[in-house]
Image 1 (cartoon, helix red, strand yellow):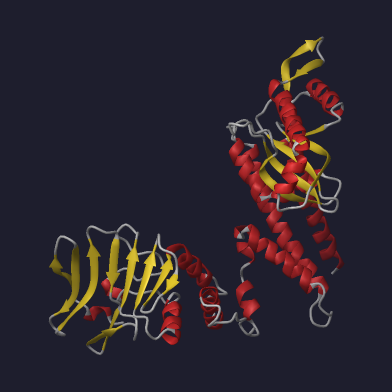
Image 2 (cartoon, one colour):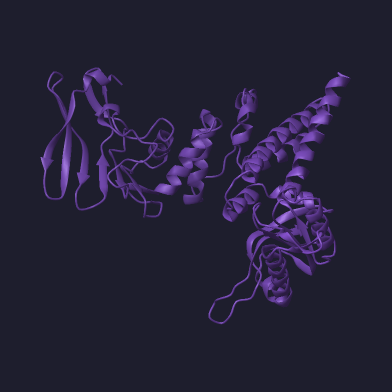
Length: 430
């Protein structure tokens, strides 16, 4: 669009209820409606346009205006925000307009609302702002930037709105698509979400079953090791940062372990999966108070038995500084004792209300004398004599396993070393 041809957007009419704007260009003798801003309602209407060959025309053949509700006087992401760009949607979201104009000839207005539900009416299409943003993000990915993929994303969105009119489609795969998405992207692996990582792992598993002439299994395994290696490095860096922090922040540790729940699998001698975080394990009174919540519930992947994990902080004290007797007998700190009692109390409530909780849960689980874990403090903070008292104490705890944050860190660091060793051995054989 030739922006230099557009001179200005001016107030054409100003009343108690709204301000009406026109785009004017005296040289080109243009004067047309471009925008309405309402004063008593959080509402803006834009009239998308183009200027071509010194003439004005509507940007979209059928849809004349787009109404925005609830955006506090601004236009949302995915829109062209000024008259200089002619308003309307960006190139990606224009696919929604193209789809509407092709399949709903009577629609002449689009409403984007923060509060209203998505619906299709005789002459208008209302879309909730959250759904629009979700579509925008899908279309903004490298995958979504491919024309065929964009068309399918929009089509499949409308399937949920009009299942009687549209059917789900899968885009035809074009050779080189996967290469273009992954090309030069290994340095972005650290930014992958947990969903992205899970999708990669699933892909590796599926590729491993392909015929050898179709795909090299060795290449797949090598690539997966590279990905695993980078992901573990990222976790170690973040873990080390929290481990060296001078402040105790239980919430940050909770969030870290929630994002990297696989870390806890290193403390079990059997295959496990995260069952729930901040899980209710009973204890509510009739006034809805005193509910018990475990930080994390883990589950044996095969037997479905539950384990309870309680998280404190890396700065939590383990052993008192002054000896209790002589110079080599030390008492356990109050916070550690409290954490042990807390997790045992959670287990007691879980077992008492097991049948009720199990009947209410959508997931299958069992509570056969659940194992209890407390993650707390740092072993490196203790001297040799304190370490002896700590080890004597925790080894005598038959119902609760106590693990320090630095010990858990070492287990993850050991994983990285195993990957690096395998990588070096593999390289030396070539």
